[in-house]
Image (cartoon, rainbow, N blue to C red; front, side, top):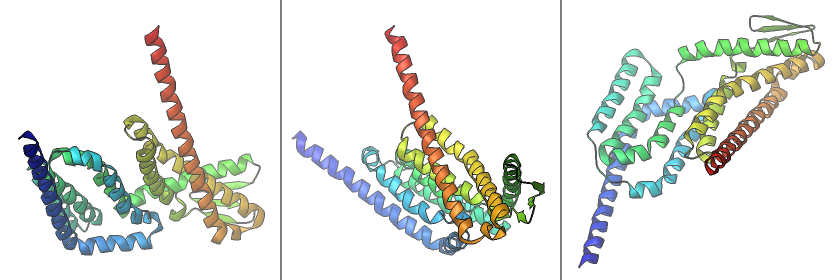
Length: 301
């Protein structure tokens, strides 16, 4: 008699999961339809602005991360929470602020907050906790407000230009820095906003999050270090890129600072950034294993 009851209970549980899934898909489809103009404009930004071209990969990666949580989702109870209404309300407030103030970032973030609210409302806290990372990862697809970009980009331009001039002077190349303009013997280079490294910073920050999730699952402190280190690594490799551009311009003319050679340098330096990130992950793993062996030795003694 017990076996049929267990089967019935399992069937009932599966039915609840299915109903919740269908309700969530329907609600998400309706939400996407409402946000369609905002999402379409954001998609055009991804296509037009190289600084945010990584946004095209965010949704597929988020879905992949959510798929990887499937075993945990099967074990998580479906218990809808009214706290989801509060998260939805935050999303609505974000949309209202964005609409009234003309803030695209707030409008776009409202969509992600609304999706998070739907998960919490329909599926409950346990499912929300399991899917928190894939949902939070969606915020990386939202372009930064231009006012913030202006604040960040110019200091990055100055850092890259300053480090480049220091590098060239140490190699005996006569160079002079004036703001974000590098004066060489026969030409000058203008470190524009496109050369600030913001594109590398956004792409490498996204790569750092993906890298940490794939290669350091469950190791929160290592993941945080990897993601945080993506910022100084991006600044460093961009300074190296500007330095190489200056060296080439000094020896072979300003033409080497534009076109294919300039783009090729970007690919090389981004590859360098990935190697640095990989090396750091190896060092963190080595350090963690060393500390574990040391603790085991001390415990045995």
